[in-house]
View 1 (spheres, rainbow, N blue to C red):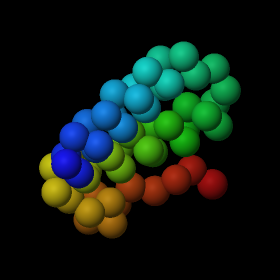
View 2: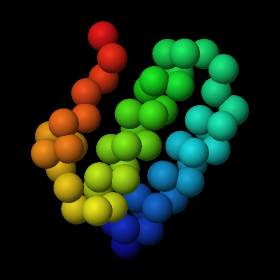
View 3: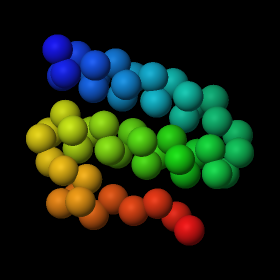
View 4: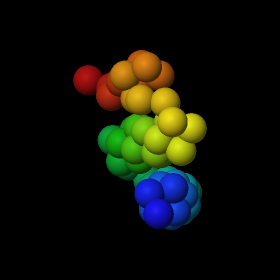
Length: 54
């Protein structure tokens, strides 16, 4: 079930990213998308060293 939710989240973030105009929104959505992809692959975000832009 968690896998299906993760896949749905990825699709949702992709759709929002395609329509995003603001740079901060693009950055945030890119981070969220990468985090969900890590979850799908079973990799923790810390292992993948995903960081947000300051």
